[in-house]
Image: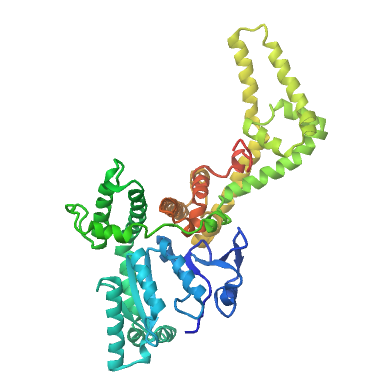
Length: 507
């Protein structure tokens, strides 16, 4: 059998179409063009995986993939390269379901049968696809399919594994020609319907079974190490309950059915030690570079405040009139005082703040002989003076102007403009935009977009938590990895626009 692929290729949801490589010789992911993918995952472009690729991850912004799907295409087992077979085996412990593809011209060789045996110990959901079915006809086709079904039933210990005979080439040709009759004859629609049913009705159960398998395997190790029932820490009662729940999930039975120990020992024999490493390396997740969103109004404010401080730190250090005006205004508010400190030099701060400190010292000294309440009133006036913070005025004016321009673009361009100027607004600036009383259509689009984006962020937060909890860190996509930051930006806005510089200890 001619090997076509030499490395793992994964398909998952991402905010944009992109391809990321994770290699053995690097902790960081490398982004490549889509048309370069074949240079890394095919046997022709990367023979024997000489480039040391761990995984090529293709991310697509498809709603279908947002359900938490992570498709993994492994190099074929039983090919000329033994490394391909080993690579496919490595992914079994972290797999929830397998679509096993064989063909009529060499069905179920020794390596493939061994792989199916290993699948039985790791994966609760298996579908078998028999490709190139158009190359055999009549009785020969029936004989091949009967042989495959019988062998699958023997290996899996069950006759419930579905087998789908298809012709991938005929299906592709039919799709390109929009030939519905030819597509039906290819057998592909039946497989697609089965996948849709699995995703709609079985995926949740399969995911729970995967978690139970890993928990059972770990408890099985504890049971062996503690000497079974001779120890007060014997996990056998919990194992019995978990295996019973697992069987009911697999059989789609009610979880509230009475628990029986029948078959528990056989289940333990299969499950104990079946999974010793329940998650792939976390390098893919930990080395992933975050790609985050930013509220466009917050972004405009961040740029404006940076430009203001960059200019003001020089003015305050060299211009005495500016120093006196700065002191009379009470300086910056507390948040912007420390944000300004991030850009100004110690010398500039010493020169620029001297008149302000002198003014405050004089007012404090005048309060020496005053009653406490009068002194408090004097201090209150000093604090209120900070309401004239020049940096705050810059932010307010920038917000007003940026919001007005954005609303005008939304009103003129509708949904298309919304994608550019309003899709990622934080709640603070969404409130500001709605407070201007925009046209009803614009307001509705803004609110609907915010609700949709918050729902997506919520799904990503939950998916991230589930994958971390279930030891599926390597399956976390970029949108899930930065969901926490998107949530904070939406709820509170960008730090730089709120008077806190990125990377500060105070943040």
